[in-house]
Image (cartoon, rainbow, N blue to C red; front, side, top):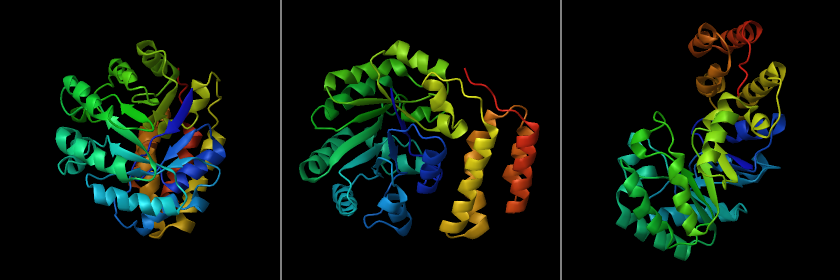
Length: 312
């Protein structure tokens, strides 16, 4: 099984990715949070700079519904040495969907088809797609696949939820196998949070050989060790060093100082807090911290008083 790290806006930055690779690794392909500026912003350039992603296979992800915009971004990425980009047709955010971007593009299939025809005709790079299976009904999946089968998609990453499901309703792994008739590389995405959860997906389609995981890894950085058959000891020292390293790098490398660093760290704890037993009051203190000294004191207390859960 190959594992990819899903792009998560505000969390899987180049600092998070490279630090994760240093402490945990096991990722086949990393993806950037989506790029949306026709001329890459400074933040977006930092995400794709080769020196920020050494030793990793990185696929830049683009969020766009305009062919000219998409193609302009790919030109900039080609200049950095990239040969593959990923089109985001999966983001379920209301502000994105309302503009017919992300999974919202699936609601206008004729426009999507026209867009894909233009970018596949003109883009010099390989294009993979991350998609949801529709907007509100599973019956939308087959017409979407009929569009995809027209194009030489490098890889189709299927988040087996509808847009209306957001991340709240369970994934629908039974929908994945329908895409096999396209005859292209496929990657499964959705609700891989433990070995048991992975087994349920593989029961629906035993042929799956690549999975993209986002929230499951943010919540439990040791998850891949468990999925690969190991029995990790849930190493709190390693996790604490990992988080401290991320903190130090945000302070040193990103603008905004302590305030922005705290914001980034708190986003990680939205998911990571669930990995600890009886940690609610400590996670609450972490989220309320207004200074790094408060954050660090709350984190030390959590690590001292709470044990990591053992995933099954």
